[in-house]
Amino acid sequence: MTITHLVTHSGGFHADELLSSAVLTRLFPQAELLRNRDRQWVTPAAHKIIFDVGGAYDGEAQIFDHHQRPGPLRGDGQPFSSFGLIWAHYGRAYLAAMDVPRDDVEAIHSKFDTKFVLPIDLLDNGAMEPSVAGPLSILTLPALLGSLKPVFDDPSPTADDDAFFAALPIARRFVEAQIRNLAAKARAQGIVIEAIAKAGTSPILELPMGMPYRSALDQAEADHMLFVIHPRGDDWTLNGIKLSNDTFNQRADLPAAWAGLTDTGLEDVSGVKGAKFCHTARFIAVASTREAILEMAEIAVQDVQ
Image 1 (cartoon, rainbow, N blue to C red):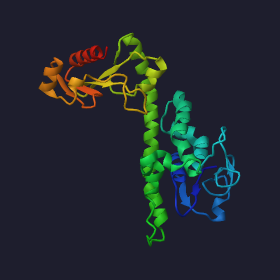
Image 2 (tube, rainbow, N blue to C red):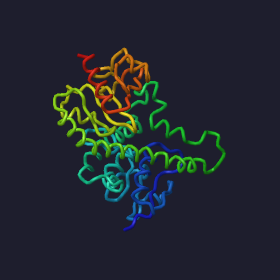
Image 3 (tube, rainbow, N blue to C red):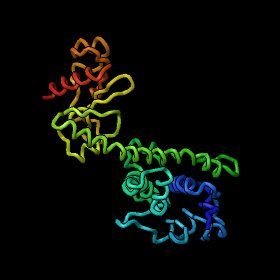
Image 4 (cartoon, rainbow, N blue to C red):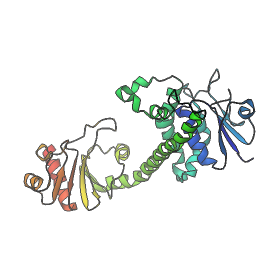
């Protein structure tokens, strides 16, 4: 039977049902998204998907609440929120709707669940304290989406619904951006692996364009690589390689003498005609040609060694 209604609760909202709505409205664009707690609406039926309300979890009946006791748990014992339940049941179809290649669906479904969905689940269930984000706690996605709620003294009787539906396209943009980035990383993987093989024992990795390369380096165990070069517009860039995605520390920094220099100043110090810029933090440099950036890369390697 055709899904005609997507039902979640009325009143204040949280990230889990907002993000669930972003997934479901993509899959069922003709269905009405309804915020209602009335028994007639939160009772399962073949034409409805009910989430974050209703006091039950039954995938076959299409009801996905997590507030009942005991609540639904992942295989490792961690709690689901409605977002986790919706992603578990509809995430693969959502990825297909986002034109993710079939061969990449399972891996991206799992990565998105781990990196994006699980933290929402844990925060919503109180299994993770917002304070783990430290000073950035107010800038986490749940906090930012929560800031879109109406203020306490908004007199409008439709304030909650108005805020929810205004926040929905914002939530959708975050979900879709994450999926596009994961799909892009999957596309880049093969390109980078091929470039690593072509580079052999060289500490300089040349890529055909800017792209994610960190996971491919780890997969290939290319620990000897120190710098990455690639074209960017009319110029070429030379980048250091971070030790991990969780730090700004690099395997090797660009020469200290280059820091903060531009144009003729950088050309004079580096001895490279066409050198244009080096960041003060020594993680990126720019040159006008491939030949110039390769020369800068070789000087940087010699400086490290």
